[in-house]
Image (cartoon, rainbow, N blue to C red; front, side, top):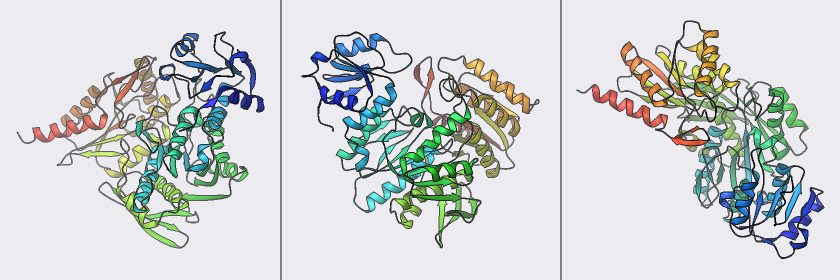
Length: 514
C-alpha cells in the first residue's frame, strides 16, 4: 500500500495545480504526516486526512473525525477547527486528483477494461472477469481485479459493493492494492455518475466499451436531462485507447462520433447481431432450453459459442466481452469455455417446475430498455405461457423509470403485481401509484395488485398462477440477487428473490407428491 506522506507535500501538490484556494492552520503543518485518507467518519484512524463532502455534510462529522485521529481535512469551506484544512473550489475534482497523487497513479500498472451503458454493465463485466479468470488460471498468473455493482476484488480480498463505481479515494485504493499484489488486469463498471463527478479522473484504461444508451437516471439528484446523462456516458472515451462499441444501440452514430473525436482512442472495434460488417458479428442463433447457441464471425474466423443466459441482448454483451478479451490477448478457446460456463447472479435466472407448468424468471431489469428486452426474451422462451410480472421502482432517483416500466409492463401483460423496491425516504405507495397510472394508460383492462411486502407479492403471483391452471411464467424484476431493501436510509434484509422462488418451486413439487 502507499507510503505515508507529509501533509506539506500534499499541500504543495494542490498549490502546484492551482486547486487550493486557502490553507488553514498553515503554521502547524510541518510535522503532520498523513497515513490514510477517507470521507467516512466511521473509518477514521490515526493520522487521517478527512474529506468533507456531500450535500448533507455536517460539521459534527468533522468533529467526530478529529476525535478519532484526523489530523487534517479537505473541504470546500473553512470549518474553523483546530487542525489544518485544505480548502478547494470543487471537492470532487480535488478528491480525484488527491487520490491519484497519494496512491501514485496505480492504474499505470494495471491493464483496465472499463464498461459503460444503460443496461448490461454488470453482466458484461462478469463475462469479462470470468474469461480473464480462466485465462489467468491457465497461464498461472494472478487473478484479475474486478470492480462492479455486485462485488469488488482487489487482489487481496473480495468485498461487497455499495456503488457501481466507487468514489475516487476508494477506487484508487483498490487499484493500489491490485498493483501491490501483482494484479496485472482488471475489469471495471463505469457509471455515468462516476464519469460526471470525477471518480475516474486520470484513470487510463486499455479498453473502454459502450454497450447501449436509453433515458435513465433522470432526476434532480442524478442527471437533469437525457443530454446530461448521455454526455456523461460519452466521457468514457477520454479514458481509453481501444473503444469497443455495440452497433445495435440507439444513438450509435453519436457514440461512434464521440469515440472518433476522443484524443486517446487509437482504434475502434464494433460488435453487432445485425450488421455482418461489424468487427465481431453474431449469427446462426438458436435456443435450446435455457442455452443460446450462436456463431461469432471475426477476421475471417467462425467461432461456435454457447451461452447459458437467455436474452438477445446478452449475445451483444457476450460479443463485447469477447472483443475485450481478445484485446487482452485471450485465446478463442478460453473465451469459448468461459462464456459456455458463464453465469451472472440475478440476471435472467430461470427456475422451472418439473411439469413445466410453472416458470420463474428472476432478473435485475429496472429501466425501460431492460424491461423491453426482458419481455422479449421471456416471450420467446415460452410463447404459449401466461405471463405475470412482479416489480417496483426505487425511490429518490430516476423517476422516469416509473412511467417507462409501467408502460412496458402494460403493453406486455395483463397480470401485474406492484411491490417495494428500495423506496428509501419516499412513500412506496406513491411510487406504486405512479407506475399503476402508467400501466392503465397502455392497458386499461390490466389487473394490478399492490403489496409492500415483496415476498408477499411474489407469493400472490404464484398462487394466482396455480389457480389459473395454465402454464405460467412469473417474472420477478428489479432486485436480482440482492438481499436488502433500502427503507428510510437503512438496508433491511429480506429473502432474496431467487431464493424465495426456489422455495416456491420446492413447495409446488412437494404438494404434487402428496
